[in-house]
Each structure stands twice: as structure tokens, then as C-alpha cells.
Length: 117
Image (cartoon, rainbow, N blue to C red; front, side, top):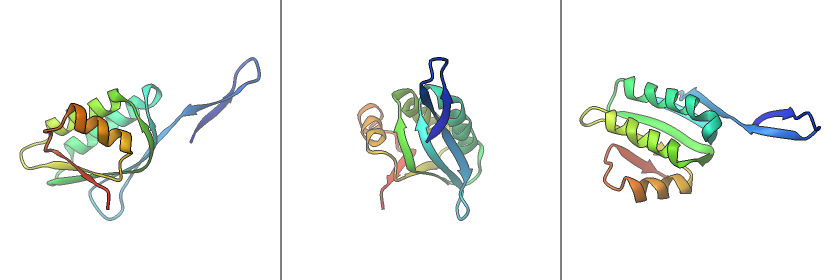
């Protein structure tokens, strides 16, 4: 997934892309693509929306996310820490690497729940 362009030397390169769309049946967003330097702005806007929304639970459907860098995981943790008392983000099918980074760097962050079912 990405934006393809040709360099002056004729090499075709695919730039990372990230798409975000609202979930139809519950409060949250579906995210697809890569969270990295080129897509941080899109990711951070999506997380800001999650923090602003009403409701106790906000779902992030991440099954189509192929990569999240550590800075993207940090932005997710920071957004979760901004949620009010009793609110949480549910990460539906996040990439395994994101789960590991969250468990390693933010093991006690109760505002994030991981769902793999």
C-alpha cells in the first residue's frame, strides 16, 4: 500500500500510506497501511479524534496496519493517557510488533485494551 512515484533515475518507489475511515457499527476508526515518519501526521490526527470523541470505549481497527514505528506507538500511548477516567481505547487486531512495544514500554497503561478475537 502506498503512493508510487518515479525518481529522476527511473526507479519506481512506493511511499508509505495510511488511510483512516470511520467504523460503521461502533465508535472508532479503521486504519490501514503503515505508521511511520511519512504518515505520523495522519496517525496523530486520528488519535486526536479518538481523544475528543464521547463514549467510554473507542475502537481502533488495526488489522490492515502493516507497521507501526516506536514514535507511532508513543503517540498512541500519549493519546491513551489523555483519555478521561474510565475511558479506554480498544485496539482490534493490532500488529504483533505494536503489541510487543506497548507491553515492553507501557506495561501498566490500562487505557489501552488489545483485542485479538
